[in-house]
Amino acid sequence: MNDEIRRLVQQLADLEEELRDKLHEQETRVLYQLEGKKVLFQEQVKEAHAALQEAVLPYLRRASWRSYLSAPFIYSLIIPFALLDLFVSSYQAVCFPLYRIPRVKRSRYIVIDRHHLSYLNSLQRFNCVYCGYVNGLIAFVREVASRTEQYWCPIKHARRVTGSHTRYSNFLDYGDAEGFEEKLQLLREQLRKKAA
Image (cartoon, rainbow, N blue to C red; front, side, top):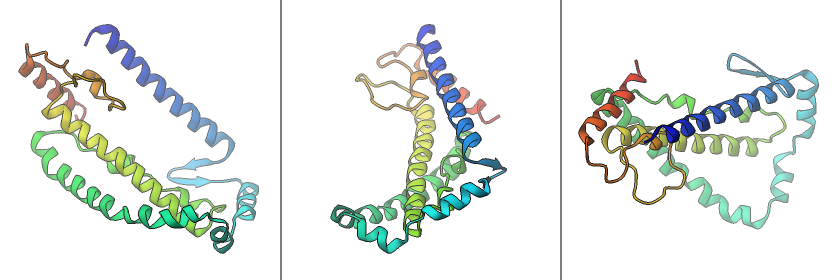
């Protein structure tokens, strides 16, 4: 990868990080404060939230037939997602230490905290837990997979890839056979140094 592309990739990563920080800073300044892992609302905000909560039965009465039809399909996915979580966590626990790949902290990806919002009823809270778990799990699995790909096959595809992970830009160009082993070892060492 040439220096200009490397610079642009780094600039993009820095801007994404800055945007996340600014958005979080704005949220916490306006709505809540974090004290360790605990979320604190002002008393008047808590009261307003509680007043906005809709009971479960009226909420269910308002639901469309589409919601009722799709619910079994949505909730049944918890089984394959839980199995995915179990297998990927086991895979990482066994394989990553063998190759000295730094382990992915699951807790950085799976964040379940929206169920503490008092303006949500119990069904909405359950749905928020479900979505937080599933989307966090997908991000966790993607990071485990990207580290695995960097270790074993860090080669770009011939065709354009939509939604590639952040490591992809550092991979070897498709068809670049010269120095493959040397570059592969360099990428493996870069991956290992992140753990140190």
